[in-house]
Length: 411
Image (cartoon, rainbow, N blue to C red; front, side):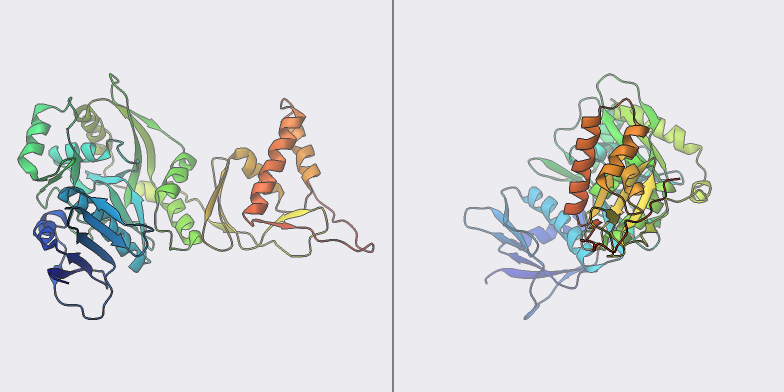
């Protein structure tokens, strides 16, 4: 095809193919600072990502894991989509990396992750922290080493959605405007100096998770939150789906338990930066946090197929983490992670020994005498049905007359 260019990224074994849009390469040094990128022919090698510029002026992006082609009219929007696909491709090839949606900034000695979803203000806050002199590891996606639990800087330029917030202070606005190097209809890419953007593959222990809550007119406030709240959110925001769920759950459990956990309520980003700087200035080292207990990943050793009729039992080979009376389970296939609230976690504990649904209901009625019996029964049956559907339970087989029901010790 005319004007076809193969682009090879460091750490990717297969190339990016650009058809009729080789001009995108001119922006790669800005968008991917610190990456080794070159162009060379790749005879017989299938590209992992392809971008075609069609006759109507649309950039059509394809990747082998995408169900349909994505189309963009704006050049910068296309680059934004490409960044996400390159990160995804890297996780497909490096099975030692998890990836979380979120910004990450090192404040003094503490690497802080802001694991929020789309348009939560994390990129603006990360940029404001850079304006205050703190080093940005990521403004959108942070790889995490599965082996060590450290955050790994991807060295991707931060981007901001236009227009910027109205309440940015003059100094921050000047900082941003002086560093905007590429403007699109919706997004602007910033060119940060090496001291403000962590170099590629630089690593640091994760010291804190901070979830953002924007509310007009409020003074900035950090509120501690539970480990289970954090674990529940970071599990869903990890997108290394090809990695075994037991490994993901074990590593994220340890990372969360070794870090501080907060919600940050704020209105003005500059005031939030000041509060974060003061709070984490007192954290001279993460060593004290790293010495704390970890959320241990336990494996279900029970699970004989010899479960009498009418009885239920946990399936063997399920990994479990308990935190704040909640439970997180990795199923036997290693392909999914499941969350149980405190009541579900209590029922899961009962299922460590053979037990019937009726016995579970009876025990919960004793434990929760103020709850209507009909509600308890409905909730139990709904949960058991869900656990069965997820293949987390063994269901008793038919027994012969000579078999006695098991003795269940409830002491």
